[in-house]
Image (cartoon, rainbow, N blue to C red; front, side, top):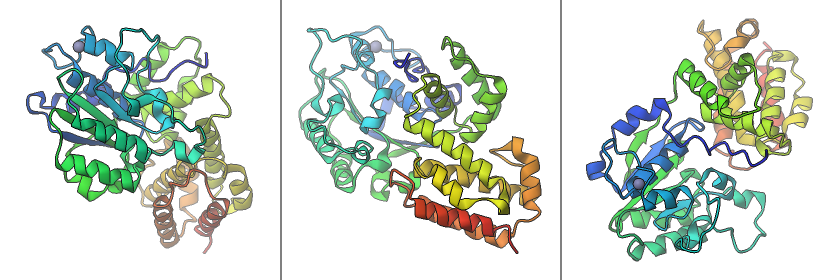
Amino acid sequence: MSDLNVFADQRQLAPWLQPLWNSLDFASFPSAILLHGQSGIGKFAFSLELAKSLLCEHTQVDLRPCNQCEACHWFSTGNHPDFIALVPETHRKMLPHADYEGDDLPKKSKASRDEPDAETSEKKEKKNITIEETRSAIEGLSIGSHRGGNRVILIYPLELLRSDSANTLLKSLEEPPANTIFILLADRLDRVLPTIRSRCRLLSAPRPERNEGLTWLHTQLTKISGLKVSDAEIETIYDEQGGAPYSVLDSLITRHNKDEKDELSISIQASRYLLQSMSQGGRINWLDTAEKTYKAQYAYLLAAMQRWVADLQSVTQGGTPRYYPKHLSTLKSLSQVTQTTKLHHFWKSLIQARRHENHPLANRVQLEALLSQYQQVFES
Ligand SMILES: [Zn+2]
């Protein structure tokens, strides 16, 4: 069961990304695209489909990969020599990989999927794309493509490219090698170097409407045998995850696999605890909350806080909650004791904190400071 892979079954396009696909001009495809949008809405799956299409050796009417030619087969088994993916180790499970290794298949590109030589890398390192990988991938570009067609380089998340690597990339973007297409992915466009941004065709990936996202999710879940989860629970997680269906699917499967030590499970549990505490407004026990949650990913906690505060701001102004509609009554009663100026300051503090969130784990002291500031929001 632990092999159940969230991405194995999803390489068809999510319906909300179909218009984006239709807008692509395959006849004169740009040498670099930068696909950006909220995390967990299907950018990665979209990019894999796109890469496969650009490498497919049959001409397709609908411009989707044929899934029959040699190139498509190699791609699906993680062996296409002209597909290079620069992703942190933590994201490698999302790539297509071989179920078998035949002798007749070409050698994989060294930079793409091999484990790092030294297994000394700390957790933090695993979240980065290393300079060695980038350099060796980019240096390899001076040689022609293996198959004589396109070559595709996928980088995700672009925000995690270290600055030395980013400079190496920038040089290639300035003088793109022939037949080479860069597919760059970013969850946060504001974190991408403007010099890189300006050399790419920007593509904005939309988030689905709630109903569309939920319908898609239900379809995906029916394909997973033995996964039982109630509709109400799906909706709760859906809202918690900010309406990102792929994130929801990932967390449901992770839970299904009962991999309790998994980083995402820890973060989900922690953010629930956090929200429960925050829903108590001025009665929040911030010391206890920080104690119980600080082992989760800081970015994850901050995102949950931001969603909660966004909803609180909205309700305070007479609007409706976007992320936690089920907590409308709690939000309403909190809004009556909310000091709006303080809430606005707290929002700014969260944005400030998100700028430094790349530290993989939450810092307990920082969390305590934020949560105690949250408590103040309800005190006149
Ligand atoms: Zn093909």
